[in-house]
Image 1 (cartoon, helix red, strand yellow):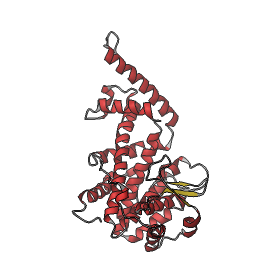
Image 2: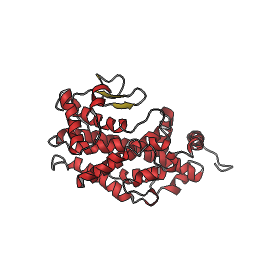
Image 3: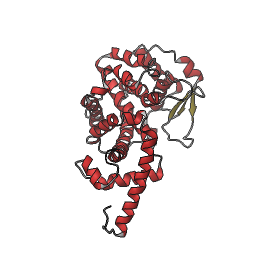
Image 4: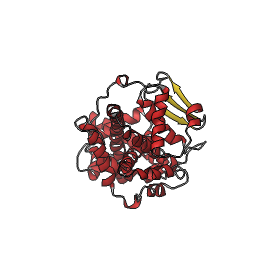
Length: 330
């Protein structure tokens, strides 16, 4: 605020709000400036921005109770068939018999819920009795195969959804004769992706405005962006900080990368089944490689990233779901 400039009450309140937000971001940035999340913030943000223009809204999800029901044996068979089809060399029988816990009802969680907990050596899934259980089990096995006991390091946590998402999407893509069920699940995932894009674009965008300009003024915002969504993004940041921990944005970043890489790996396996070996072999390396070296396993150079191919496959996937049933999936 310039000296000698008087503000009305509304402007004064907005200015005070801005100062409070700037203090929050200053502390947040100082705490995490050396983290893997800030190191790759541009990478995630660029992908999110490119997706934003094409994923503009959420699907209305049908109730999963409308989906066909399967026995426990049939649920497990879907997973085993996927492993057998691609000759995935992993003995899942012991895991399936002794380490998978099915819970009834939501227990205060989302009805569609799965978790791999290495501390208790368990995979927990909220049972729906539908093909969703098979998909969630495939995803959680993707965690179980490579997770170690104890806390993950930052790099491992940043990469932690890539392999589970990859195996989940590849498994779904190969569920022949289950297109209606697959579309239900895909819409659920696209809705989740949409929410993460929305938060990343608003929150990371404002964080970068502050990093590059030292304040959150409209002038600073317009120096970074051609379109003026300042009021929306400012209010979104204010409301988010009032209700949530800003650190939650890190999980959005993790899942966004998981979705994007998972969908891309699905298309690579669709083009060449032998590519599943790249995904399977990565389980042995994810705990020990840097983020850059892990991405190199998939032919991606983070220092010379061509974002279009990554984003294009996601948009292709969203397009397939959008035109169904006019055209069969895949």
